[in-house]
Structure formats: structure tokens, C-alpha cells
Image (cartoon, rainbow, N blue to C red):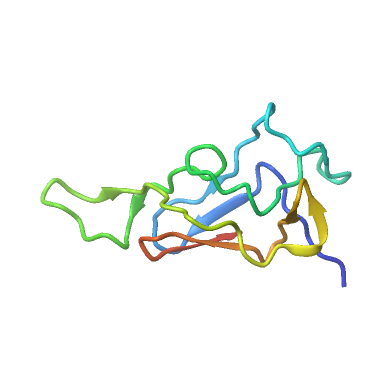
Amino acid sequence: MSKEYMTAMSMIKCNGATAPVPIPIQCPISHGVISCKTHLPLLNANDCVPFLNVLTFGTCKMIPPTPAGPVPCIPALIMAWKQGDPHYIIEGAPALTKDSFLTCTFGGTIKFQ
């Protein structure tokens, strides 16, 4: 069974937030490995920097709304992506697959769609 490797522009969603977003293409920050299928840069487990690799997901459902309304999502990530492919290392970190995920310190889980 072949693995599906994730690239820039792959859609991700947090189960604790309201909107899916793509992982943006960061042209100067590429690992030098391009997918033959999509011609986009492959991702590794260290591509987990808030507002660089992981954008806001709309509003956060894990934090109760304030009197002013829902709280904006601000990804709070302190660990790298989990369940990367340990057999395919890109710049010292496992390549991301469809099964990879991140955990936000507010309680949400970020997965590929």
C-alpha cells in the first residue's frame, strides 16, 4: 500500500475550530523535494510554525465565547507533526502523510482533509 505524502497547499482542519485552510506555499522555505504528482513542495514534521505553515482556522470552538463574541483561532503548537513517515526523511524530519496530525494546546487536533 502506498502512502499519500502531503504537500504545500494541502488542506488541513482543526476539529476545535470552524474553517479548513491550506498549508501555504512558502517559496523561500522549501525543503527542495517536489512532488512529481502535484509539482508542489513536500512537507516534513517540522512544518508546524503558527502563521507560517499553519494559519488560523477561523474561530476557536475550544475556548468559550467572550461577551464580545467568538474567540479567533490562534494555533498554539508546541510539538511537531506526529505520525510522519520515519522511512522518508526530508531535511532531518519525517515526511508528512495523510495520517499525520498536530495537537493544539487549546485541545484541538489538526488533520489533513
